[in-house]
View 1 (tube, one colour):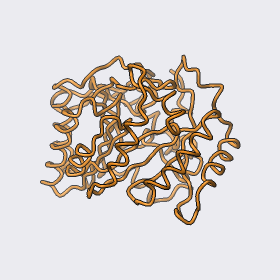
View 2: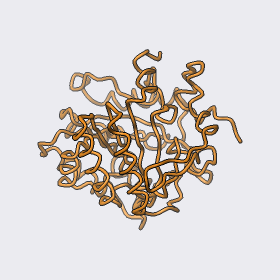
View 3: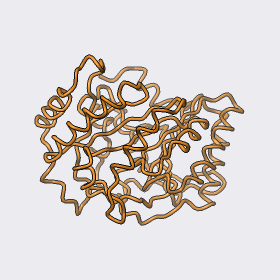
View 4: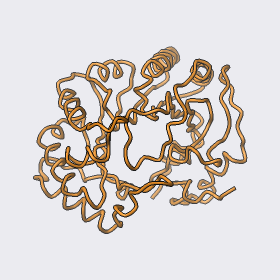
Length: 327
């Protein structure tokens, strides 16, 4: 059920959430990925535009959040650092709360880099694992078809020794074929990482988001998915972790970022959108950021993404793309 505070926060003009794609290239080629990697690094004109937008908006905010997405955002870490340093400084100057985080495959997130990001208030990281090495290295491979699990696991273990305050959400992908592999991984995570409160687990069902994808036959029905989560989590002593295992099926009163009026996505080419899944959908092509920080927006298109607030439909607010009318 949607709470009044959740609705108020989603509508507040004193909060701004920016989803930034510093590059849309990626060093991975996950077998179920929906992205085409056609757009490269964010050019200087778009970087200037984002910094100008932040400069103009921050004096009128209570809170600014930046979420880095891609592609793989760490392929353009200099862009991330440039904008991140600017945002952190401007927010500090005006007494505005600032936070930032990443959706990253984690391959390039060396411990020293993670430490440096936390010093700029970039403290949240979502990293996906598809099981232990047996399955992860079949579906989450490099662009050169190389294995990735060993490198990611080495990084995760190294993060434990950092003094930094961070929050790493390990997104565990599930499908019909990798249940045993994820169970082994979950056991290892409890043994090695989950006693540290900076690490958490979030289950997610693999979906067929690509028009040419081949994952369809592996997708778990809802009841089988919930059974799989219960089976996987039963392999450890529940007393070691009092938190309920989380997945998209456990969300309650959730409003998707794409439905919120105070959230915008800015792609590497400066195009404005709402949803990070529908990158090539014309309904998600809402306008353009200019180098001076101004934005041209097609308001009729934009309003459709926020239509769930008219009747507080939890389905529409939870995923506006699922109910968006075709054009």
